Length: 227
Image (cartoon, rainbow, N blue to C red; front, side, top):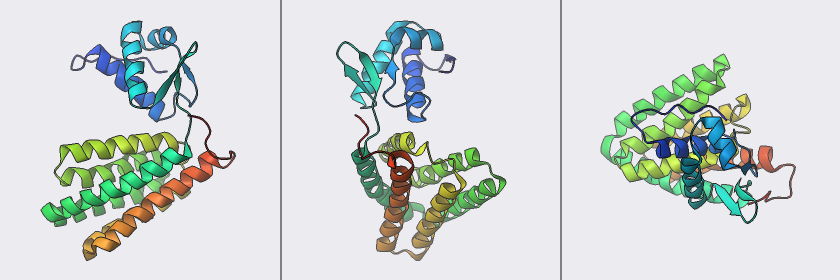
């Protein structure tokens, strides 16, 4: 785990919580890995108290589980959770597009087109880290232009949870290209103004992401690999 740098604009508790959370979501702390307070505190350079509080909050968020006589363990991968996240995201992002197009349709279309152009550039350069950042920005643009802080928060939270599963396949050119084409279909549907086509494009995009996860994460298992 990376050494934690505490900035003055955040409390130690907040910083430790967000740090451990991000390490779990991006796969730096593996599923089913045991989380030992003293070890984590030593690695990030803080006391055990904020670590203990962070782990408790992460349990409430369903990212870790507390096991008697063992302690906290990162939740395993769960196919059902992947299915649920994709369905919820499809509903929420469809709503976000409806709100954003009602408020500032042209600005939304131009911003998304520019984002996709940059996605293509990064993929052609083989810069998949750059692509992943733009992928996140694509969905953020929609949520931000929808004009709802709560919707933006929900969108970002769900995407981070999904990233925990996608981390094993998102840095592949073929999955990046499939995702980018999904973004293009969404923008094309927005331009045509067909609400049913928009909903279908969003759903298809997320189904593709789900299928990539199921193939690359669960292909060697019979299904649920632990909770």
